[in-house]
Length: 337
Length: 270
Ligand SMILES: Cc1cc2nc3c(=O)[nH]c(=O)nc-3n(C[C@H](O)[C@H](O)[C@H](O)COP(=O)(O)OP(=O)(O)OC[C@H]3O[C@@H](n4cnc5c(N)ncnc54)[C@H](O)[C@@H]3O)c2cc1C
Ligand SMILES: Cc1cc2nc3c(=O)[nH]c(=O)nc-3n(C[C@H](O)[C@H](O)[C@H](O)COP(=O)(O)OP(=O)(O)OC[C@H]3O[C@@H](n4cnc5c(N)ncnc54)[C@H](O)[C@@H]3O)c2cc1C
Image (tube, rainbow over all chains, first blue to last red; front, side, top):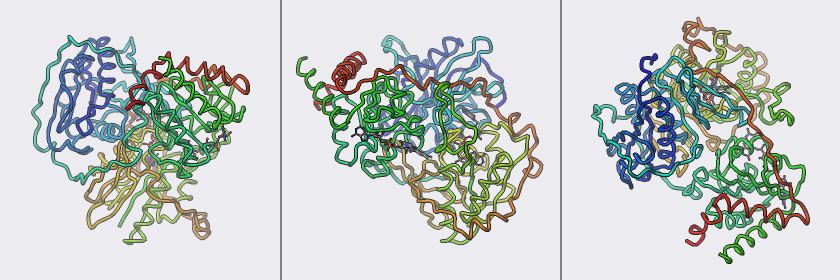
């Protein structure tokens, strides 16, 4: 779509999985509010679902002016074709200047399809969003090449400007419970709900009930763990901190833990508050998945291990000695409280 | 079955070294390889050809050197390879890349199935596959970790954050694949021999059938306006031997100030 409208709204695509609102929806709505205030425009959050466990109007608390609800059986499971149709249809009618979606497997699937359909650019997996003070254009910053470089990207001549945003990139502000939003149920032609894709079902698998991308604390283990049972040590530490367990590819390849736990270039990218790398050397490919963590703790017996160079706290020694000591100290502290 | 596979040549990440002073990636002298996930797409295509007969065609858009990646694909057993190469294709974003690939596919098709990697290890957007599908007007799926062809449809298992989604798509369709799909084979000796003499088809914008304005940088809606290098080294505190106790104290203090010591409490007691 060629540029026509510089006063349009910011449209946030929300994500509801099996009735539960994904935290990225709130995060993106709040970020969109901040950007919209600078542009002098409004924020619309779109939700597509068959059921939901919240009062959707509450998204106003984080900055939505309008909550658009598209409700129906086709949203019981994710269907990329229906999502693409609905979003493209709404973009054509509403002319937003910016469209944001979480860089989840779903967002990374329907957003490129929408961008191709409405003929505009799409910046992937952003970790920074800003407005250019001179032009009012969206400045989209993203890591590439395994997190080794950052690029700032603009979409100067096409609308809308579209980006997927890595979950947990932006802080979620305190809700302003007095704020109100208008809830709208847009009229959509029946054909946007028809799809050639048939969703046959969904299976929840071991290790997939908890998504390490959604956690504040990730405790990852590598080749240094030596065997599957030793991951229990990391599980204990993780659960004390309300977190989950990640792994290097070496650990996954050895079948000590399943693939959904893998962090890195060919696994997941995580940005927790605290990342523990235990018995992980710190290959470029592993760093690609955890460099954006706020705080990194590395435990390794090799003083030269590259992981120490990206660590805020480096504990050099035998992990089978250090991890139990940390667990013990945490329990001790708890006892005191 | 006539199958098209999209293959990108990327820098060999095994050889990637960091310039520790500048925190930049050292690119010179780094080899180029087929994007690792694309090897799984090639393997899948060859398996299907063995089962159902037909042909596997590989398409790559890139500089003349990308011919190497295509010869490697020949060594792995694909039937025909197309290199879309033209100075005006340079600096394409995913939209312009997809446009170019889609045009070549439309011109040589129709195909029963189009396969791509879920993402490339350099650009890492994962956008090219879905964009090609939409431009061809085909249904598509992503994150495919298992595929069964049943009559006129593809039944796929797609691995997502919280489980596996099972979908049935009509053929033709486009799928982007994960490494769980299969184990890529090594090139055979006969394959390598064949690859050396193989005729790589090269197409410029005229052959592809697009105007120079529609491709490369001029056809790209996005612009990279700045590139910078993130800080890779942190001012870390290092503890060893007798100092480890101090290190663990330090760690607990940090965990406390970040609120995760208490945050985890309810969870641990559940
Ligand atoms: C295309 C490609 C994609 C890849 N994708 C990924 C990815 O997504 N994620 C990933 O992690 N890797 C990935 N890799 C693999 C990566 O290159 C490394 O091989 C891998 O990360 C190594 O895992 P590791 O650190 O656990 O093992 P190692 O490198 O073997 O390190 C083990 C570490 O444990 C330490 N150690 C051993 N025993 C102890 C002990 N008792 N106490 C304390 N420390 C101990 C050792 O000092 C060593 O530093 C990829 C590679 C390629 C080519
Ligand atoms: C630092 C940096 C950041 C960038 N960010 C963006 C961005 O946010 N948005 C954007 O639109 N562009 C971006 N680009 C441009 C983008 O990298 C290129 O368009 C690239 O050619 C394709 O994108 P990709 O590497 O992300 O491929 P992906 O979409 O990740 O590749 C997925 C699959 O598509 C197929 N494929 C991809 N490229 C080709 C090809 N040339 N030939 C054949 N098959 C192929 C392969 O099967 C591959 O496995 C960026 C470029 C740089 C240097």
